[in-house]
Image (tube, rainbow, N blue to C red):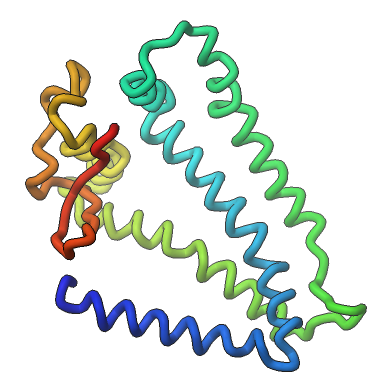
Length: 207
């Protein structure tokens, strides 16, 4: 991927530039309105629901709180009471309720009292599907790459990677003292590219 970094970057910029040209035509406002109608709200809403499910219900809300306390220091239980209520109940319930309500109250998009044709509505649904479909696709890829039967693979993918934790050893403390070295390739890692172009697996230098 390092050798293909420049061509891929240029290719993506060129493709996105060409796709954006339709928005500066005489009919551009109709395209902008269509994109805004489908992608601006639902994409963020679905991503927020999946994010809170991933962090609180898969990674673990209590584990997440302990990670925060490693950075800000231990707090009394009453300090986390409101945050637990928001993360575990209030926020996911409200997000799901808003999502369901938006589907129930969905109106056919229009602009200036001119309704969009059927192919325009279908294109709008395709755009939102294209935006969010990569989340389940990557989940399926990770499950396929894991080892064991299907249940073991799902459980493995729902657990933190062995190299998950503070990048610097002095920040790991007792909680992450046995974590794998982030410099070595391990399971389910998320590689990043530094400014020097060298691949890294750094989680965070300030974790």
